[in-house]
Amino acid sequence: MNFSVIRHKDTHQAHVIMGCRAMSARHPDRYAMHLLNNILGGPAITARLNVSLRERAGLVYTVQSIYASYPEEGLWEVYFGCDPEDVARCRRLVERELRRIIEKSLTPRQLQAAKKQYKGQLGVSQSNRENYATHIGRSYAMYGRVRPLKEIYASIDAVSAEDIQRVATEYLRPENLSILIYTPES
Image (cartoon, rainbow, N blue to C red):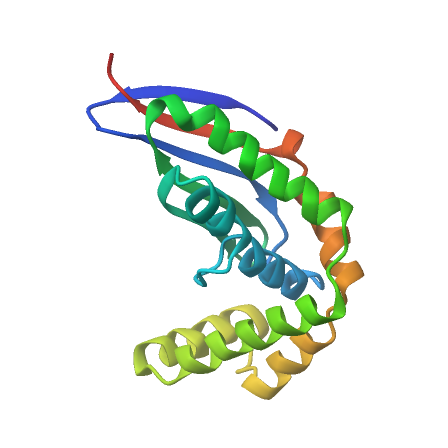
């Protein structure tokens, strides 16, 4: 289901969320989606949406994407905040990046860099006791056992550029996105 909602709020900038349903935490393509999300809007300054909207166009302070997976369902979204008059341009730039990853497969070098970065993030997050406890609880809830980091890394290494492109095509087509915009009151 695709919809667009605009709400007026007492805010100085527009806040935009574009998103869609995604696969569950048990789906075989979940690691392709995690990598795809990281490439598009993950925490690195080299994430494609950050480069396009912030670094090149100078339209946002923040842009990020999130893939949240649950036992039976998942959600993928992009958030950005911008001046109200820049909302349409920012949306077009997001959609351009989505089409770009759908239409052009990652090179072997891009894929390896994405895997290395994502595995590094996972490794660092495991050094925090609270994150590790969350990992254990989530693993038991999803799989009935703790999945070792080596097993997770192997699942990430098994993802191909074609897997990422197929997942992007299935889930992240711009026409699949629902949009919520909070914009300043006139």
